Length: 347
Image (cartoon, rainbow, N blue to C red; front, side):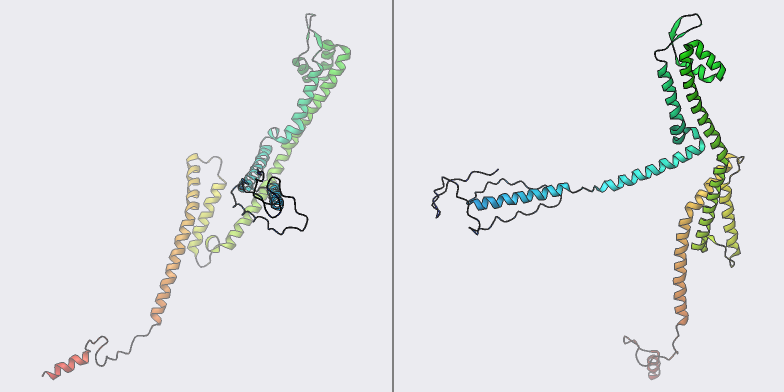
């Protein structure tokens, strides 16, 4: 908050301090504005100034006001910028993944039981429910005559009997219960409900007929992707997955591994459960241990290459010509000739 300028002793302007100094005319007074305040560090809130200092001239006051306005504008622009949360992208990815999983699950449900799919619910079940609701609303204030000649309120059971009966029987029942005029309305609702039921049943039957075709197409697509993946693996890692003409024993191990996995994928329905469990466990253990076996093989291969390199360097080296040393050996140790001379001299 800006404080009122306090009284000061007389200055050169002649102002005794009782009144604020007059504003200088444009171009007058070359006094410098207060130095700009340092920018707050990232993550820190801006510091709020107390403005306890005194302003000697109107120009200082105006400069400070302009600085505050500029700072407020800058802060407003900062607040207007969209804040990118580091967690936003993570949540967006999770939502996208969840939607993909839901879509895949919906596809599986649709193939397993069409009546439980969203498509069936939206196209056939919901319209059928609406037709039933409209018919029941029509009967809310309708009275019918029972077998004893008494009146009662029309019920959903009455509508159910009319809908489920053959056309002639339903028409007669509607006339007996509701009279000629109301029977026509009820029979129209019956037709609407029956049409919805028939449409749903036809869709289910068509879906069943198309099921074999869809399953065949799905199997063909799987087979295509399966064969392509196997070819890519053999081309990328021939040392593991491709036959080697120079290693017939290794080819036998490779064939046995392929047969094992193929059996696990295409298990006979009548295979005992203990055999099925053992087969799955063996495939699991082999797949899990493959990475470690490869890592150990690579280390062993690197060690063999290093030893072969050392052996080749050793074989390439040339031994000396066997010339005896003359005089004293390195370090002042007497040579063999020196010892012989010393022995001969003592005789």
